[in-house]
Image (cartoon, helix red, strand yellow):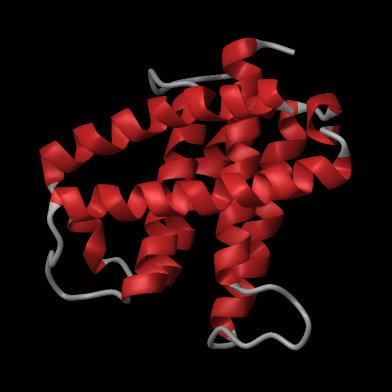
Length: 180
């Protein structure tokens, strides 16, 4: 488990660095996104990963690794948007965005630790393509919840699905970065 925590932190540092650089380039322009648009952004990333996995044909000079980073960062953006609500213009500083980023990374990591304990690090024996499929399934669930105005009868909400997507993407990043 200590290895997983170390690897989680290492790949999250890469994701955070990308987030910081994009904040410098664009500010927190994503604040205008409604939750459904964030879900669609994650869908685009996951769908591209699945296409690359299936076709092995890459016509854009970016591979799977950056797409998993995008899923992590959009998942965190989704959690921020759920927490703050969407707005019509940027209303937070880069510093505040990073505070929120770190808060939701910590929450996602705590969830990963709990599930990883209970499941005995089963993710390490899974195929990379399974993470992609599980993310796509979580996106479908999230779209259904969003279509029902966030109401569920028995299931977890959108926030839990975003955290699961983040963690599956982190597992993919760990496998790609560190190998099996």
